[in-house]
Image (cartoon, rainbow, N blue to C red):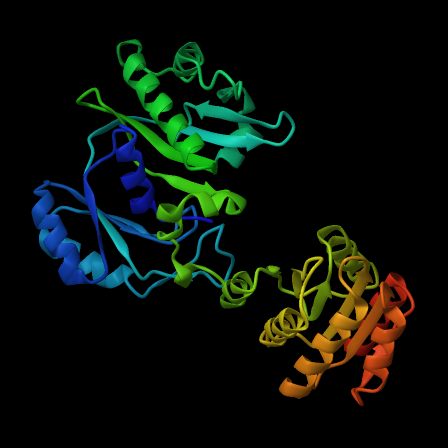
Length: 386
């Protein structure tokens, strides 16, 4: 789960991390009011979307008076902002952040990430702030420094100091940088964040070390522990189908293909998508209904798949263990009957109650193509769609 920059900065304040003053605004009038309250000679107007690269896409404006604040706010609110992370469809700006200007002397990069190789939180830093870290890694990897953090000890002060020196934080500001890193690490651990990125971290002419941006990503599996974080969720930034899936505890991710997939088990779902691709097809989604879904849950999953107008065919691939094949069959029949299925449907069932499941499908009167294996089913749906 992601949150907006202004929400991330409010969270950082709670942990003693220095950030510029600012307020969120949903209209030009609110933006002007916020700018007046800041009383800053220079105000930064920032588009708030769940994507990086906003500055390069024209989503960050420098205003030197209230009229410019109003003008930039009108320009950004409602704008479709296209960055390297949004894809060509972009995202609509529905809120902006009005922040006091900072007298920047030097920009740096700082982040905490979960390293899958070490299974530990890792602190990353670079003196190349304000740039895409991927570009830095490709062009000047020697400028990226890391500190692997012991989960028992936590981030040690000496590690933070070493990183500060490695990325060339001015010597007299190292202690301030260390304090910021320690506060940031505490926020990461307390809130079960999987990624926290500060890009840029800035040293100002006034000798302050501040976070000019704040990107948070939280572990969805830990959100039950953090109701305060869940309240920050912006549904406008998420796919409607994924929101609906979360309400029924379905693991769903929208893709850009045209073959809808309904599978039980994440591994089998991945294999199903790979096999569809092998036969020349393109999956429209990842959908794992889980091992103990009810017929009602399956029906809702089917509805979510069909709500994607790009779907031209559906492949149901179930290996029944805890999940019984007859339950899947009942859900498929209910959904297809209620929605008036108009696209090809290929079903492959194996496992618990498979014969009963096939019987339900055969007696449904629906136009269903049976498959005997994963490969057979993938090949059939690709041909029917193609």
